[in-house]
Figure 1 (cartoon, one colour):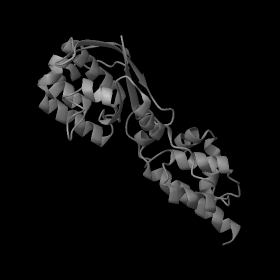
Figure 2 (figure 1 turned 120 degrees about the vertical axis):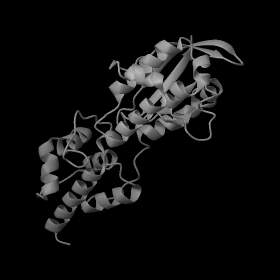
Figure 3 (figure 1 turned 180 degrees about the vertical axis):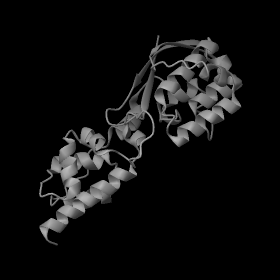
Length: 254
């Protein structure tokens, strides 16, 4: 295949995959709706630490060279599979090296095995997607379920949460305000989730309609555990650098 066609195919491949990935999957929050499908060029450029012009030139098939380092960043930002990554490297005329190290999200999930205090990972809708044994023992009514492990549904819909969480009204009100700051209501799925919560919980509805907006913060968290009594922790929340849609929550004994 002539070089010009290779370059053009590379640009088309990048554009197609840029248009497929949702901004929130890349950890990007937008205000309002956008007519641009997937990521904007400037958003992809920011994730890859290059100029938007460079991404534009690549997608337009201009005779510019993409380094192996840039291709690796593109593969990570676009969440390419191993097969897609290898194809990207071939289109870019670079040798296919070993698969990159696990993404920060994978590393976070793996690290839970070595954390000795309660720890769990939330996705963008606050579903628990990973946790350790210490967290499961603490949140028996939430993380021990066979299915729905959404934090907001547990706090507002499970009567056990009002017993477990000390000063439940204050903590629940804060959670509603923190979720408002965290979610993108322009996203259809987020809007449906909030509508479901409004219809299911009068408490959530009351707090949500106060329109409080608070960034998720750490601090003292106290629980009245049925078997272990009163437990206090300092809560710390981390965001993986390239997966801002995930949260690693640690509870350090106080």
